[in-house]
Length: 397
Image (cartoon, rainbow, N blue to C red; front, side, top):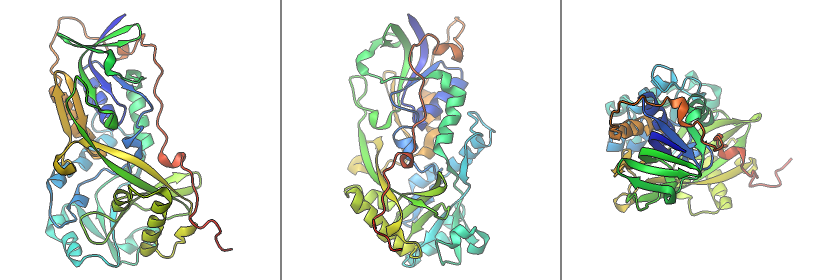
């Protein structure tokens, strides 16, 4: 059996999902294949923050990365409000703000920068008494800087895409061995199905491997995330001191009747070579310095390792923007950040120059018809499968 589409998308993370939605809404015939579950890997391991870019400017100047990403929160908000397609108005919003929480040893130059006109477009200074008691529990500072960044529940975001475009997704481990170049694109052999496609998008993150069809090389940026659970304050905060990166970036997530702190930032980046026990001890030390009132040694903790995949850069620098490369109809892309997904999809669409025909195009509902492959599920979050244990196995009574 033969079937013809315009775009075969490999990878069910946020980049592949957003491109599937935008391309389908634009009239292209698409099919997405995912070998594990939607969001498995970088997407579900992200903290769900729609960055506005100021955290990239903590060195005291607005960087190229900041300029590229600063419009993303407003674009996402329109989709989350249902004002633009794809509508994501069923996504759970955990917080409509993120906060800079200064430590006792914060650099005075950084304080001056946060209060400067340059940073004014990104932040608002908020009196601590105008925030919930949860924020008053984590700092003695009289005020915090509020970032205009929403924090999303990633599983609900993935569910939104599946509900609207799930009929165009299948579970399948894509293999270059089954891809054959033709004069009009490619044929991908799926058992007894010959899938003709004009373009192939490799949006699989760490699975974007170089092949005979693709010369793009990637770099990996390893993270060692930390999770703590208990009756913790529900906060969304960048703990900052000096330097160009937050010490810890905290997002709060419900788990049964408790709250999980999912912690990234410099802690996760610098701890990538530590064992899980060493990383938990480091996290407890840093957390104790910031919030000594909580007995962190007695809190159940876990760690989670994830590699961020990016297009290879000179000296392994972090890319400032999304990366898209087209080689004879095989498009390889890295969104760099969750927030960049709309920009990623728009750039892919610019490359989709499908020739018009006199034939009636297939409707999107027919694309997956007769493809005998299982449907995809939503990947679990890191804290749902974590192995929890406190550093202090014998807490005092």
